Length: 406
Image (spheres, rainbow, N blue to C red):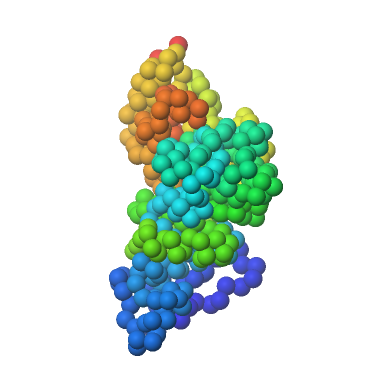
């Protein structure tokens, strides 16, 4: 038994609340949480059929669970995708994509500004299996085009990037990939489907870390891939069931509840981020602010067109310093002076978080890789939460105003 069938033309806010609400014979209003490892079959014939065709019935939670299915269906609806497959984390979603699409001898093109773990996985780890990855500047379309080879199978971008908020033109990259017979995958973690829907712009796959904005309160880990039914159910579903990188029902249920308020949280956090970025630009101790919502951002026009007129909830800034070591010391001082902001590398939380990317999210990269990505020692990343804006500003001002003014 399910809730009312979604109607054509329902807005994303409605889909986030009403899409895929499973109900048992008891008629519960909130989504049920199916905490079970296996499902009892009515007879041997049905059992044999369901094990052979897991899409027709539940047998074992590694191959399917009603709560997880609800999360997959709701996220697919928000992204405008035919289907979605849930995974244990955002990085497991990226691994699933790579294992499902690539083989020895294949070539991938990635942005050099992606999340540090993504760079590590797609570069060092996938190379052990004979997959070669070329990293190119995120904003240089000519570099993407020049990197294409006859064996290029995948272009993979993150927009906006972590932590510098660089964008890529999704439609242009999609055209480029398809002309080469390749696929385009987009990590939509920062923007969420509230700001942009990459599939509508020509992308083939959308990657999510549900750990971030989809949950929204830093409670659980989750990941997902959205795309065509052929790719999701034909390529990825059999692999995720065999490999066991599945999302737990409890985590799926938590993220389901988080998605219900996604549009309210993201819009409010975007407004905080824009006002905070404008304030930071006026601080004498700040050298540069990276935020697509600012008119000073080199891709501001693209951001307004591609991200539903909003700049996102995350921003970064560099403190003024003469040397990298001084930059690191001053960044640490600002971070350690906070009392409200949480010093953690997570983002998407209703609580504002602050981190030093060079020693956290990008800490495992070489200095050359960090420099290529623009992650300098004086860089600080802020993921805006829902606290009062003046309290966030005052918290940052404590450290900034006690820095030496050269």
